[in-house]
Structures are given as C-alpha cells and as structure tokens.
Image 1 (cartoon, rainbow, N blue to C red):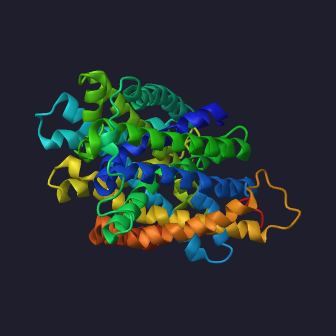
Image 2: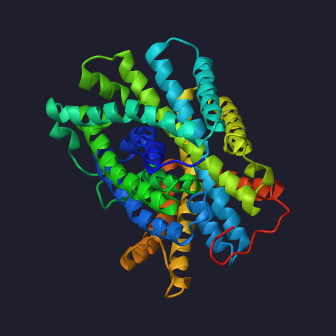
Image 3: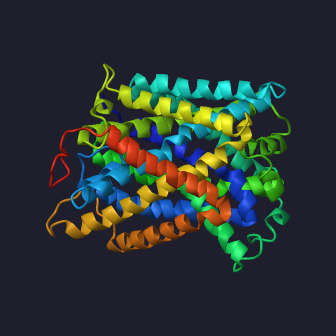
Length: 456
C-alpha cells in the first residue's frame, strides 16, 4: 500500500508537537534562554536534514530512515557500526511510545480525574500504547488517516495558543529577563545548562528525519520522502520557536517549568481564561499524534533490520494490510515492559517518569544521528563523479553536517552535567543491552545483502 505526499506530511505532523514533551524541563534548566535553545536546535535539525535528504536520494531503495541508510553505508566498512547505528536509533525513538503515553495519561488524569489513585494514570498509559499499536497493525493508510484527523485536532489549536497571547497582550517582556542561563552565558553552570538543553531539545527538534522511515511507502518514492523531510524541518523551526516564546512570555520561567508532564496546562488556563475539558483534550490528542508517528517509524526500521539481517527476520513479515505486524507488536511489548519498570522505580508517580526515560533514550538517538551524519558525508565522498542523485545538498552543508556531528558528540559527552550521570549511564547500559543482546539474539542467520547501490 502506497501513500501520497499529503498523507506522508500528516504522519510527520507529530514532530512539531514533540516540543510538549520536554519544554518544561528545558525551561527549568536554561531559564528564558531556553527559547534560544529550542530555536537553535530546530535550525540544527533542518541543516542536518539536507544531508539526510541527499543520503536517501542516493539510496532510494533503502527504507527505514536514517539508521537504515547509514547502516547501508557503514556496513560496507564495519558490520558492528551498522548494527550500532540501527539499534541505537531504535532505542532512541521507541521509548517515546512509553514517554508520550505516560504524559498523555498525565494530562487526562490531571484534567478529568485529579483525585484518582496513581494506578489509574498508568492504566491510561497502557491503554494509549495499546491503541496506537492496534491502529498501526491495520496498515499505514489507516494510521496516516488517523494522523490526519489528530493533526487537524491538535496543530490548529496549538497554533492558536501560540499566537493568541500576542493578540490579547498577554506576552510580558519582563518574563524574558534576564535573557541568560543560570550563572550567565560564559559561566560553567550556564554553558552546562545550554549544552544540556540542546541535548534534550535535539531529541525532539531533530525529529523531521522521521519522515524518511516510511520512505518506501510513498507513491512518489524518495522524491516525496525528501519533500516531506524538508517541509517538516522548516515547520519545526517555526513551531519550536513560537511555542516556547509564548509559554515563557505568558507564564515566566517558573510557570513554564511547574510540572513536566502538564507544562502547558497553566498556560492554557491563562490564555483561554478557563480550564475547559476541550483544552485538555486537545493537548491529549497532540501527544497521541506523537505516539502514532513514532510507532509508524520505529516499526518500519525494525522491519528493515529484519530484512537486511540485523535483527530477527520475523520482524520483516507483513500482514494482509501490508503492515509490519511483528515489528509493531515488538515495539508495544518492549514499551509495556518499560512502563512496568518505570512504574516500579517511580513508585507509581507518573509525572516523574518522562524526563528520566528521555535522558536515557537520547543517548542512543544521538549516537545514531552522529553516525548518520558521518555516513552522509562518506556517501558523498565515495560517490562517482557522474553519479545521479535525486537530491544533492549544497557542498557547504555537507561540511556543516560534519561540524554538527562533532557538536552532537560534545553535547552527548557533556549531558551528564545537566541531567545527571546516573541517567546517562542508564542510557549507555540500556544501549549496550539493545545492541549486544537484542542485536545478537534476534539477528538473522542470513548474510546481509552485499550491494553497491543500496538496493536490497
């Protein structure tokens, strides 16, 4: 089953609302300067997208996103690097299903049943996760149409909430002062706050690359995938600037960081003048949008890994709807287990879970993004002079991509100063388990196809 570009864009429309996941923690860390953190991170994501666009244009028959594309390039040099690239990406994105499900459940519980026991919130989180899995098992067309409905219901009101404060005069310039991280721009604490903010923000703001995970299912092939990638990246720059500006402008840093899982609830109350059920429903829908989008992307990568011999080949099987059923069930099961573990570790406090999961998962995501940037450069360098590509990034952007890869390395190795070395160590341990255990235990016995042009 193939989809047209508009449906592809609707699937990727979850990227702009990913800012809701961590806007509160980043504001708590960097203060008013978190506005610059979000904007800069989205620009970095868009600049990297040009390199990813060229990579997918040069390997048009490789679906599964940047991890599968980089594995195709790196696998010619080192199979372990290809294995790390893919499982790192999966570990970086898949826990989003648990994170966003928990946050969505937090919205519902806080808005509708605030006096209910903690276990009700967790039950809601499992329900959100299971619902997304059920939708995706029925094929990308249904999943895309669900995304279209969710996108309209979420993006329009979120855009209104971002613009309305300006029209009603509720943006207070005093809330942006002093426009600096705690301790100042050039203090050790200030630099650690900016680096830590960019680390967490990158997990959301680099997300336009998710548009490439289902590149094999566009009717227009790689051309549609590239258009969706760059369009989503450009929209993300606007959204990731406007939403933090409005949030801090209305509430100030203290209000913005009040509670990570319900960061926008006091904002919605202030802007609309009342805390209506409709406002909370819209915020809940926005999180569903993100869950469904990541489920689509993660399952497609697992399918590609099964096809190419980097994971259990059963993950590559499609059902009658053309959906990777086994890969989807693998994602749902892994995240259900993750929710149980977090439930135990947090003693049932759902609002304390997301940031710990996010900091740990982001270790894997940054590793995969760094490797993808390197792979894009190597693919350009190794391509014959007369090679035809569906998209060719300006050469300067490929060089900038390497600089950004180095920047991402710096952000990764310094993340513990802001988010705690225990969380970063947890991410490294989980990543090692994902690569060393899952990558080997479920690896197919089939040899990885040796291809020169990326056609598998």
